[in-house]
Image (cartoon, rainbow, N blue to C red):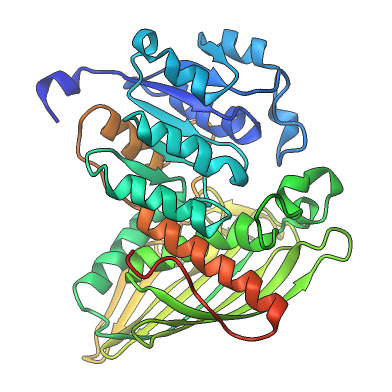
Amino acid sequence: MTDEGKGKKARVAVVGCGGWSQGWHLPNLSNRDDAQIVALVDKSDVPGVGGCVPTLCVPMDQLCAKYNAKRYRTVEELLADDDDLKLDGVLVAVPHAYHSTVGGAVLKAGKHLLMEKPMSADVDDARELFVLSRDRPSQAFLLNNTANWQPGMIAAYEAVKNGTLGELKHISCVFAAPLGWLFEGEEHASWNKKHGTMVGNGFAWGQFSHTFSWLFKVTGLTPGSVYCVSTPSETTGADLYDAVVITCTNGCTINASGVGTCPDKGFKIVGNWLFGTKGMLSYNGLAGSDNVKIDEAGKSKAEEGASCPRLEIWTSEGTHELGPPVQFEHLDQDGTGPGSLNAWIQACRGGEYFVGAGAVEGLKSVCTIDAMYRSAVSGKAESVRGCDDA
């Protein structure tokens, strides 16, 4: 970072001011001394209705007053006023179907982009974003898969990159979340009903995109074909349970289990096993905002120290290595935000940053989920399309 960048506050806008922005993005940004929220964008005067956390939302006039930010209704209006705003970056938190339109406009305007996952819910739209990002290497395009900036993910990524596991042959993973209320609630249609060109909607777009982004970043693998059996909600039709087999272009296989409804004890279940020709890696635990476990009273709590589930690596040479604690999504509302937000702000200020989840991981995840939904309908393995060059 240049000397000028060290003293610079990133001037940023947030597009999409529903529950996730009001509950996490905006508080996190306001807690930073290296960023300034200069504009908020939402077409609705009362955003967040029908979203995942509507109780956290206030009307736009109150929100803009709270953060001393100028209000716009569309991204086009926002970018047209950039001579006055002098934006460095834009955070996009709109529904999946609008990611390509809004994110594409931000990239074309030359701004650093942080966008909620998934990258899109349409392969062609995701490819458009991928190409826009590839053609603009000096611009950051980051996805808010916060698990991909956790220390354990970075350690797993380095282990694979350094050849500690040898050639990857098989991966087994499970991700379970207590989100039946979201995927089966009629009032949450954006999370459980198909819109536009979406092949399906439910757990895969809403949660499995976390797992796939993590796997594709850690391993660098490219999906080739997907076979999926899904059990849908009887009320909304959203996929609640997914059994997936992925064959990668190098022959490595992945079996992935997704569960969208389970007892709510304040955590999600994360399990990732990687098996290679020289060793194996385990990243398994109960994930909340940090590592959690069940205490004697049956409640979840943060845990520190050696008893914490950790990244573990065993090699054929007999070594056993304990790595960082198992942490997945970053859900702290009171701090300065997850690694994804920090990387984006660093990019906005002209600094170096780690791409935990970007256009490559996003595209591979979208293409995998698209093939999942197609396979669940056809009853056979489907070829993954759209990410051969990612």
